[in-house]
View 1 (cartoon, rainbow, N blue to C red):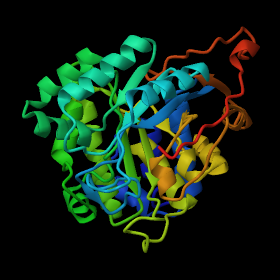
View 2: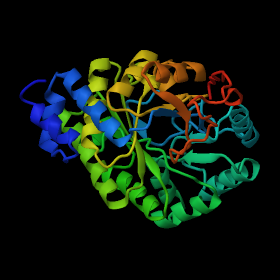
View 3: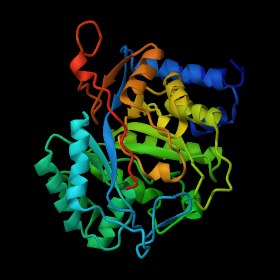
Length: 379
């Protein structure tokens, strides 16, 4: 272990909170194995159980129309673009039906900042989903979307969230976080929520009893100190509310974007940053691997670098795929990846509760071991 960071790693493993300056020092280090070993020790302290988890959901992008301009996004289209769509309700419900048939209990529903869809439209959408599929959790509408709803409806944030919750919204995804530093956000996007308001959406949602996830997309124009500032802002809100269930980070995917000239951050940087997030975010219960952007082997390695969850089977994914990333894993591959790291795979829900049917030997009963195909769609 490098002598310059050994005291910091020991401190984090012992459960003592790191300072922002210490977090930056870890990111500046190239001692990946030492940082990963420490992150793994913290994960085992927080999760001594013999299981590592995954969930089954589908990412449904109900529209690609967006009034924001994000240089890193290959998915969105300006509202007047000929390729703009809004999913017909029966098409969307059919996607959910397919998800349920494949063992899913959740949909991750996000779209662009559509300039004309009213708050009532979203309420009706949620009501239709819950009336047809009451067992399905709607993990929907990123903080930028929620903030956009307040502008369209001219209603307070709390009112908007209360109405969406009543209509059937179950939890909030962490989309649109990128880097929670205004310098970065202003450089890579226009017309989109800044840091304080992104965090406030989550804060108010948590105060209403809701839960959400937090994300970070790194490896573009941010500095190492700004990665830590992002984590620090999340850690502060988590201290206040305790409403974040997990943190997920991934590297910027430059292909087909207006930032295509930026070199991709590699697996080394991904694993190091994820490991540091496990050491720094001492109040976050779960860290998810991002195999969708990193591929099967690095996604599997992430389980030894601070992650305790393989994330979602993700029956459908469109946004990252538009940027040229096309990693897809079957359920058998996800479960095998977990087993090969020495853990028992378990399916969980958004609350990180086990929802499979394990027998006394630690094996999931055959009826729950259905090989699920991966469905990819242009929309």
